[in-house]
Length: 303
Image (cartoon, rainbow, N blue to C red; front, side, top):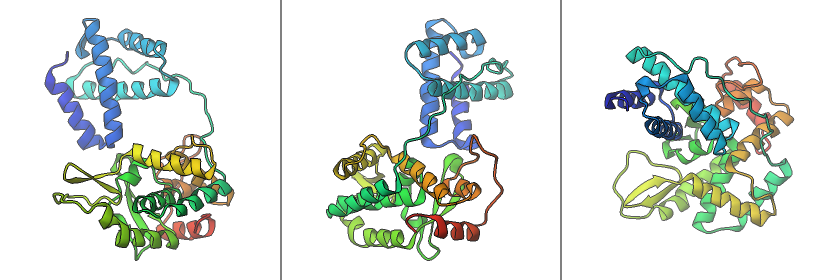
């Protein structure tokens, strides 16, 4: 296979120059390891791989059940790698003529405004400490439209109570300011004053980050897992009599749909959700925080 420093340097490039998110980095690693095994089985190395090798690999993935979205992600991974190899090691970029498969555009699942009200109302019934935490998570997830990864990585100091915003580090570690309704800020304050310390009261080592939704793990406080968030949502959905197959990410789609239905403009929505671009729409001009606050307060169903 490739000399060790090649992949080591590519890893460094991903983390320091591209500054990809943790989940994206793990996905890249999985794709590269899978391709590496395929090349090894065919007595090939990164330096000697050809476009035909890549095509054969992608065909084998498709035969094993990989869909168009998965194949597209793998191709993106390989294009990034070979672009790096061409620039740093002067290898031919064998991915230049590799095309992405066509994907069927499906509408994301989302809840109606009535269903969101049912969901949030149901969270009031569990008054345990974890129940209160789950209530705060789901209210915040819908109110802000955060990605799941952004929510679980939130730290306490990211909540700017006086300004009414939270500071979010999104994809590519790009920072954005997201407005939060007053009632959600009050929920957050109650959670931090009365619940947080009870859930995290354990002999733990001090950590650099005070995660908002932290759980004790081996004498440390770690961010709540995505799986735990999914489980919490599923339980509330079932109790509320709503489709239990709705994912946490669907709350983000729900907010986007409700804001648009209530007349919010798309460039404000783009800023709120942290999209670099919306694939079917144009890239929008910058919207100032003051304007975003006004649009948010007028159009947000929970504001």
